Length: 172
Image 1 (spheres, one colour):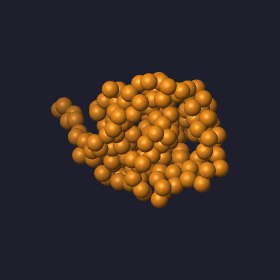
Image 2: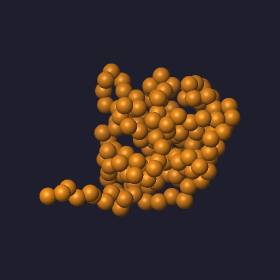
Image 3: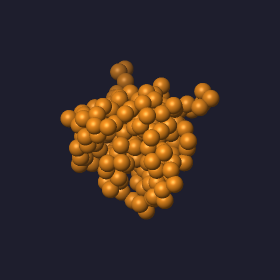
Image 4: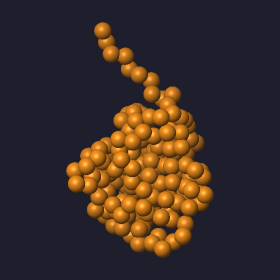
C-alpha cells in the first residue's frame, strides 16, 4: 500500500509579505556581533542568549548578500506544530533559510511589521543551527513584547504554536 502524503498546509496561515533589500554595507561574517554591540544597553531591544552571535550562527543554509532583494513573509502557525513539519512546509513553499542573520535584518529594517505578542521563528536545517556542547540545535526567535524586542534561542525540538510566525525569505 502506498504511503499517503499528508497535507500540512492547513497548519499555517498566510501573510501578504513585503520586499526587503539587503543594505550595501551588510557584512555576513560580522553582522550578528556588530548588531549585538549596537543594541547593547538599549531599553527596547534585548538579546537573551549570548550564543546568538557570528560564532554559533556563521553558516545558515542561505547567505544574504548586499543589494539582493527578497520577498519576506512571516507565516502564522495555526496550531501546535513540530519543527520538522514547519521546515517541510517552508521547503515546499520555496522559502530560503536565512537564520539569525535574516531575523536581525528583519528587526533592523522592518520591525514595525512584527505584531505585538508575536514570536518570529528563523528555522533552518539542524546542521545549520547553533549547537552548544553537541546538544540540541537552537533556533533564533524574535519576540515583540509591547514594542520591546527580545532575541532568544529556543531548542529545535520545541513545538511551535499560534503565537509563532515562520520567517520566509524568497529571492525576487
